[in-house]
Amino acid sequence: MTKSDVLSKQDCLEAISTLGVVGFLEKYRAELIQELKSVKQKLVWIHGAGCSGCTMSFLNCDHELLGTILRNECIIYHKTLLEQSGFFLGGIPVRVPEINIEYYLKDIEKTGGYVLVVEGALVEGPDNSGKYCLIGGETVKERIVKAANKAKVIMTLGTCASCGGIPGDRRSENVVRDFPGLIFRGVADRTIILNEHGITKPVVDLPGCPPKPEQILAMLALLLLDKLQFPEDSNMLDKYLRFKMIKGG
Ligand code: SF4
Image (cartoon, rainbow, N blue to C red):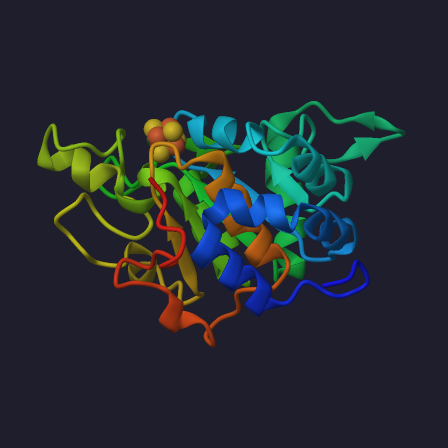
């Protein structure tokens, strides 16, 4: 493959299946950087209940690839990575979180079509109100469901987002009920929680606490660069919605 060639979906899948994610990222590093420099697809990253360790893991990935994603402003919303995921007034960032969260994210949602990464469990407690976790006067549950409704594809990142993880551990039935994953409620209930909220957008799950940096980067690159598309590639997901070639861990 010459430098001018576009990195094909087949190239990516073959490399991942034969070399693993680390080998894939090494082999096609230059091509991935090239494509990520001009990719128009945007990424919205929302946190539920978690420790942000998945974000920390992502930050440990290949810094040139990470830098390309950040410099190209692929990530348009991430409350900790982007110090100001919001508005500027007269060139000065508006430092009122409520304004940024309430209005900026609503603005993004109007356009839709982004890759949505959800890190952390969905907060449904107490009594299904979601009020254990409020941002800018709105429950995180509402925030995630609204953002998910307008996404092109949703990636649940980490075990918390997948099945509740540490916030939704099995200390009691209440805890499991109050902090489900977006996909599963605890390890026993295989309900797709997002479906309960009327979300029918495709979901790819990358569990792990946290998933490895290379797994996160490779998965995001495939989604951002449209190397994985849905519903066409649904057969590449297993019954737990994990991409069979990158199952996390
Ligand atoms: S999956 Fe693990 S690392 Fe990621 S947010 Fe949850 S507890 Fe933290």
